[in-house]
Every structure is written in C-alpha cells, then in structure tokens.
Amino acid sequence: MKFFVDTAEIDAIAELNDLGMVDGVTTNPSLIMKSGRDIIEVTREICALVEGPVSAEVVATEAEDMIKEGLKLAEIAENIAIKVPLTWDGLKACKVFSDAGHMVNVTLCFSANQALLAAKAGATFISPFIGRLDDINIDGMELIEDIRTIYDNFGFDTQILAASIRSANHMKDAALVGADVATAPPAVIKSMIKHPLTDAGLAAFMKDWEKTGQKIV
Image (cartoon, rainbow, N blue to C red; front, side, top):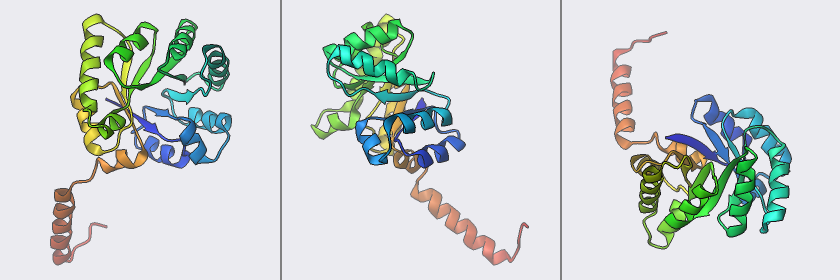
C-alpha cells in the first residue's frame, strides 16, 4: 500500500520523504489555510520535493469553473493530481481532465455507487472518507471492501485512496482490505511505529547494557 501524506506543511513532508515513507501528498483548502501560505507557492514547493502525485483541489462548484481552476493547478508541475468533489459537476470536470491526460483525484466519496461513477468518469484516484463514516457509526472499511470488489470485478484502473484516516489501526485495516493508497496526517503515520512491548524491550536492553560497563565506540 502506498502512503500519501495529508498535509501542506513542507517540513513534515520532508522528514517522512527522507525515510522513504512518502509516495505522494494530498492537500485541500483546509490544509492550505493551516499552512498560511499561497496555494500556488506551497503546492509548487511540495511538487518539487516529492516524486509522486500531489493532489491540489479546486474550489469552484460548477464544472466550467472547476475546469478552469484545475487546468491552472495542472500548470504547477507534471505530478499534480487535480482534486475534484464527487458531484455531477465534479465528474464532468474529471472526464475532461482525464481525457486530456491529467491525473484526477475524486474526493468526498461515501458510497460504492459514487466510486463506480468516478471510475467510469476516468478518475485516477477515488477517495473514500473512512473517519467521517465512522463518525456516524458506519464502518468505513466496509466501503473500501465494496469498492475493491467492484473495481476488481470489472477491471477498473482507478486506485482506491483511503482518506480521513484517524489512527494507526485505520492504516492497518486499509491495507488489509486492499486499499491501493492511504493518505494520513504525518502524526498518524509516525504513530504506526509505536508499541508498548517495543518500548519495554528497549528499556530492558539498555538497563542490562549499563550493567556491563561497556561502550561500542
């Protein structure tokens, strides 16, 4: 499973990228706002930092305006994935972008029917929102499973990008049910390394090592 980092913070992306943990980046208007930077400037910097797809989201709600914004964003770098909402206008824009050879990330997916429509419209990525479904007592991972089955049944190339990831368990479960990609905040990705038995084992090793009075260097 590929890891995308869900942030517009350059330092956080760079840290994970240096460890080989970044296969792409997703941004949205809220993350751009948190960064406090110009959308074009920060997106260009992210695209130069990572080799994989960088999702940059349109803010228009009608297809004609989405297309204008998306084409402007696509000019930033070759690895831009134009991000559009899963609305009828979003699908119209997706088809135009896809036909023109641009990567498209269709976001705010909450049903398998929506995911099927996005694949038919040529989406490169479909972004089901796991955490937001969990918030209303619907198992987000069941949606990933349904989409996986449908896409495999009919050979769609659209990649399932599990989004709204809230925990390390979400990352594990997304991998188990067959998501192609999971996008998560840097803190969630870093939390995957944590286990109390690892900490306890290391503490015991260090205590025993101190007793030897030795040094390696």
